[in-house]
Amino acid sequence: EVQLVESGGGLVQLGGSLRLSCVASGFMFSRDWMAWVRQAPGKGLEWLAMIRGDGNERGSVDSVEGRFTISRDNAKNSLYLQMNNLRAEDTAVYYCTRGWLGTFDIWGQGTMLTVSS
Amino acid sequence: QSALTQPRSVSGSPGQSVTISCNGTSSDVGAYNYISWYQHHPGKAPKDIICDVTKRLSGVPDRFSGSKSGSTASLTISGLRADDEADYYCSSYAGSNIYVFGTGTKVTVL
Image 1 (cartoon, rainbow over the protein chains, first blue to last red):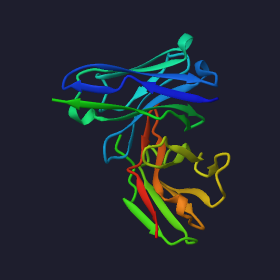
Image 2: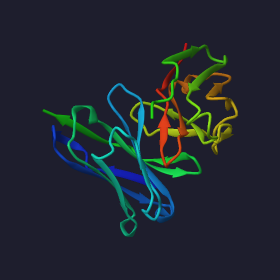
Image 3: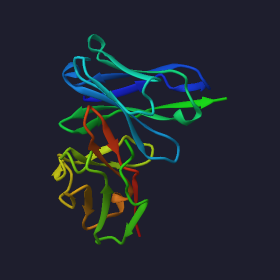
């Protein structure tokens, strides 16, 4: 079964750090671009970052550049998002998704991050 | 990297058609044909329904159609059904391994 399962969300203090994980199954993970997308409460989807299958190319949105880092471990079929210096506006559901021919076709169920003071 | 602009909401009666616009710029929607549309029911994972501007993903009914003119993409839902009620988002490639989503549109079936 094709599946993405995120984990690592929770309650973090302002200025804190957290690493989200996403485990893939059912497709050739190492071949595919992978991305993180989030949705803050009451807001729309926001694309955050993407990484190529071999890990050698990345892209990220300006608003998280320097604070969030996307990475992957193909041996573990895992995608990660390291988040530092967390702000209240980072509170959101974080989705892991596969990038395939210009679209995002496989999505996890999401993991919730709450940043609190 | 501003979000693409969509109407906040659209509505229609069962059987009617609704069209959702997605306004971008010459750097994203106007520059690339990597335009996708997603259906998102609250609490569930988003589902891609259209890619490459006009291509329906497997299993998506032909009531859903996409188009693009200049820097504006559009999604039309024909023969509106109750289960089409959801949030819809467009997305576009913006170059340099960056994508951008639209602001989202709530479709209400009256």
